[in-house]
Figure 1 (cartoon, helix red, strand yellow):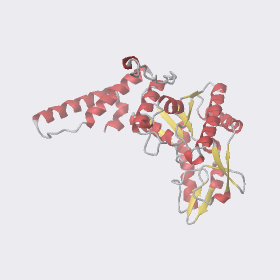
Figure 2 (figure 1 turned 45 degrees about the vertical axis):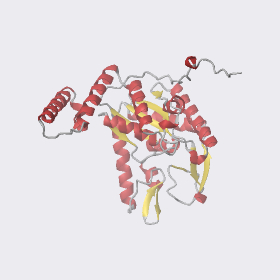
Figure 3 (figure 1 turned 180 degrees about the horizontal axis):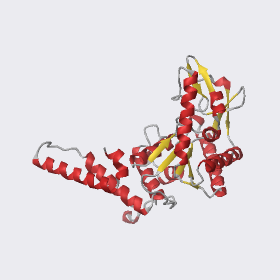
Figure 4 (figure 1 turned 90 degrees about the vertical axis):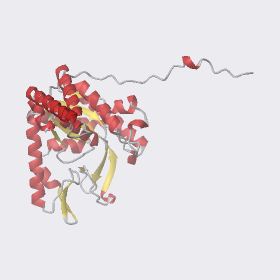
Length: 326
């Protein structure tokens, strides 16, 4: 008896699950934006910078845990001064990435204070601060129970590892939101949770960590009318759940995923007028990046004159894009 496979032309393909995108739409072009958090925050800062936004991002490098991120806002100069320590012949800070260092202690302290003050000045005039939590797992120094942003390759026996709970994250960020409101009463704070899996902790431990972070940010958003949530985690983990969207390590989003998230990021936050301007800008940038095959030919010269004319016309309408089109 022949086996029946049914009507192959009537097979329903699996439906793609889409994340409901929040329609905030409160950003115009060339706004001042601030970013803090994990490497995903760096990606969003870069795409915003490339779209002519005035961006300040992670003055103390990439930081993953919510407490160390809050310290950037809450700490005073004495806290930062006390965070500096010597390792071999260099000086580092327990609340900064290893890229922030010096061979001279006083020079490092001066650099840290300068970075802090500059970031605060940027926040004071920012429309939005985007904060991306990466992991709830933290390392505490055994000697004083202080949470560090980076272990700086100090022997692990000097630290205890634990997972933050939602209560301590919320309490710390309640104080942080209050401080930010003092700095800039009109500031919007947008929380995101990094979609990058921290597989070094283990997948079960990673999921536990992300659950704590997601619960914390939603409680914070429910308590403050100046806070919002952007679902970057849900978009990559659920809507784009395919290894085609990941790099070779299977953990970090690849360029295609970043561009997809960029589009959704802009769709969520840009006003309708800003979306039209950004679309015009990106069309022009594609034109400007086009490489001529027959340089010097009459057709090439005509093309060059045409695109320079379009560039001048665009900059006359939107002079804020001058720095990214030169």
